[in-house]
Image 1 (tube, rainbow, N blue to C red):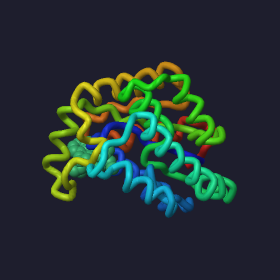
Image 2: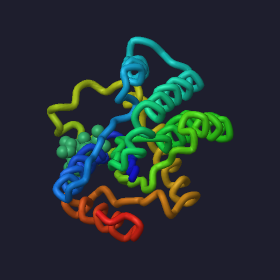
Image 3: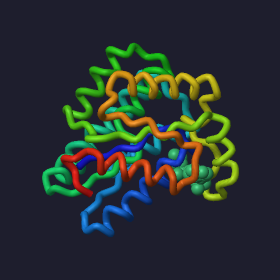
Image 4: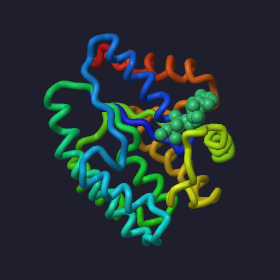
Length: 208
Ligand SMILES: Nc1ncnc2c1ncn2[C@@H]1O[C@H](COP(=O)(O)OP(=O)(O)O)[C@@H](O)[C@H]1O
Ligand SMILES: [Mg+2]
């Protein structure tokens, strides 16, 4: 089973991914966790380019770089993992491209969709949890987090950008209500976690 987590930085994706991994492992599942972009040598190299503040990157170059990193990940890690029958938990996946490059950078949505189809080869999560938190709250959380360094290139994109990104995520929720689950991220970590576990349990095909 393939589960992805989406939301702006500071929304709580990594926190919830770790909590879910623990539950799944306790129940005897093999779990592979991945962050995007990353998880293969090539994808980690592309990640460095994408997040570096040393150079500007045009929106289209950004779209293609994220997509290149993703397709390497799909072929080298995601497909083999799913074939083995393991759980895969992904910290960001293709919806990030729709929300950030499509809605945030305002690239033509048809081109973004085409790129997404090429990059994923049709491999889509069974369920995606979008942890919805406003820009201000996310900023606040990251200020209190001593492990967070200076903002990276994506994080420097400003408030209006993140409002568009959020609207992008909400548009996906309307398009794909079965896969894409909107989670109110402004609650206690444990409450959010319980929601995520019960949402997975409700998908009767997947007993966790
Ligand atoms: N529900 C929550 N309430 C308050 N703080 C939270 C919550 N979830 C996560 N945090 C804190 O917010 C910060 C960002 O969380 P993190 O999981 O790293 O977000 P992301 O991976 O989406 O950037 C961390 O310091 C984390 O401990
Ligand atoms: Mg994170």
